[in-house]
Length: 133
Image 1: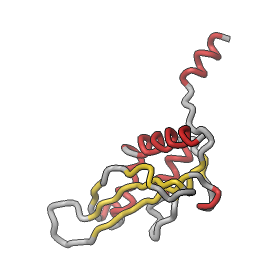
Image 2 (image 1 turned 180 degrees about the horizontal axis):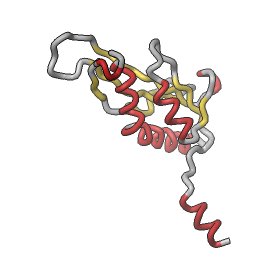
Image 3 (image 1 turned 90 degrees about the horizontal axis):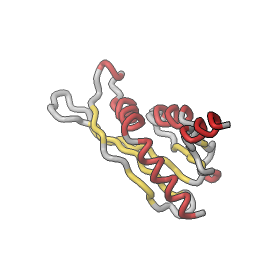
């Protein structure tokens, strides 16, 4: 019994009932975010209306043949579905298109965000959800 109790203490309680909808992007950049959320056990909705929060994967930039700085920047924005208010926005992450990412910087940017910033963003959404309930 003590072992079971000790084991339960270290099991992460991922969700508190909140449901997320990851808005699709034109080129499928959101796939890295969806994969990470599924592997971490978050509930994902098939439609915006059946979710508590909407996650937008935003990437902006332009390709320049010669450039020293990162040409593309991206971030996640989490919004409350009912009110439309922004709950959290991750830091901007930069990237450049290259042969290694199929000349698609957005996919590489979302992969960096999924690894480094997604957990903090979802933790903020959890706190917001607890406040509402």
